[in-house]
Amino acid sequence: MENNRLGMEKIGLSEVKDVHRNLPVEVLVDHIVDNQEGRIGLRGAAMVDTGIYTGRSPNDKYIVDESSSNDKIWWGPVNRKVDEDIFNELYEKATAFYNSNTSRTYMFDGFAGADPAYRIAVRIIAKKAWQAHFAHNMFIRPDAGELEGFVPDFTIINASDIQNDDYEKHGLNSKTFILFHLGRRVAIIGGTEYGGEMKKGIFSVLHYILPQKGVLSMHCSANTDNNGQNSAIFFGLSGTGKTTLSTDPDRPLIGDDEHGWSDNGIFNFEGGCYAKVINLNPEYEPDIYNAIREGALLENVVYDENTGKIDFTDDSKTQNTRVSYPLDHIENSLFSQGQNSVADHPKNIIFLACDAYGVLPPVAKLTPEQAMYHFISGYTAKVAGTERGITEPVATFSPCFGGPFLTLHPLRYAELLRDKMNKLNVPTYLVNTGWVGCNASSGAARISLPITRQIIHAILDGSIQSSKFAEDPYFGFQVPITLADIDPGILVPKSAWEDENEYTSTAQVLVQKFQDNFKQYDRGDEVVKNAGPTTN
Image (cartoon, rainbow, N blue to C red):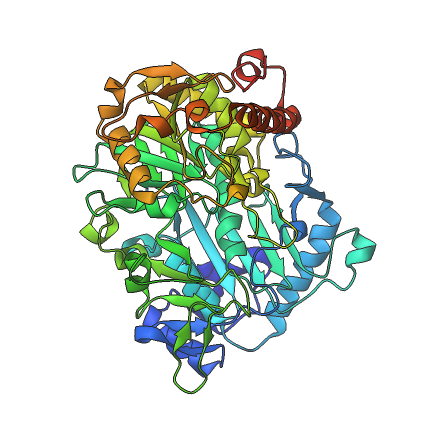
């Protein structure tokens, strides 16, 4: 295929000859095997290892400090600055690698964003067939008409085989680099094979572009009713139950990770799912297990070398074992039903938190200002025993439930959330999937999944609105004191604790953690600040 028509010369790849563009997935899998990148596994799924990196490398991600974007970026530990001269030097190294390497080059052209009004055209260039397979799964695949005359809005050049030996001279973190030039709309990757860098890299780009168009970009899952109208979005950090609770046999899935909320409604950014498979159990997570078949791509799973049988419980390579697959592998999704992954404006917003302190109620209704505060906070808690050295609950905060991917200040996304809530009168609920009436160190179990599902259903069908509510003494939000046939004794935290003094002291500790965390995002908006918890 001619480089002129592909536009390769525009990005410095004019010498690349053997370009394979948008290959069918079955051909990509053949190349994975031929290139000795991986092998065939469970029900025809491809299996690969991603090298020394089995997860993202956030300390190696940088954004070029350039005039078109530098006054908009939320600079800091999430978005580190890199000089344009350093970017240019590494860009030349990456393009020289492609121009001089005679092995196959893979290109994927597609889209990020299911709403045609707000999607961006994405081009991924890679040297590994499995990375092209990953892009094929995760982004939205174009039809033949869309592929003809395709012009990318953003390009990622994945040169994972090269490293930056001059990183110390450049003042960078390591030989690995993930650099984004928002002005030139191009990124380069070196030193890491991990596919998630491409997926989350484009997510970060959408976090930059869309809010400037009034579209809220969100790290959340979403589902809807069979008419695409009673939609709901679920925010939550790892371990809160976001994927589990948004997967509902009676509600088609819109998407499991990245969405936008425009004046038209909500839409999935992706064309696939990227699910963890550590300890995957077909009984408890049948949708994910059944999605592992031809067309799926497994990463870093441990398997028997002779039989290929996978041991999903084995974390000797990583806890972050993954599978990517297209959305039509999920039976109850809009995409598998032949629909675009878009739906009406959400009727409910749900913030999920696994509160290991046992202070948050099972469910609470938030005002728009409280929703802003808790959105900026992005709270959950790590549980004792989940990581080495953790013996007591540890509060974890991630702004907008997706801090590592934000490019603008968190308040910008929170303001968009509040504006849309107010304009469309959308209620927001905080749902605690952790402990109630005691903390995790007590040895008691988390609130049961059936109770949490009952709460979610009461939110989605609107029956929670008829409950009687009382104000939480520390967080100020409204807590139902009755809800369906759920034991009223667990709905109000103060009543659920046997020792009221212990509840009070624990609540004060958690409130202080919220307040300390919020200080870094406080820009003087007293209304939002005052919507947070207090011990007064």
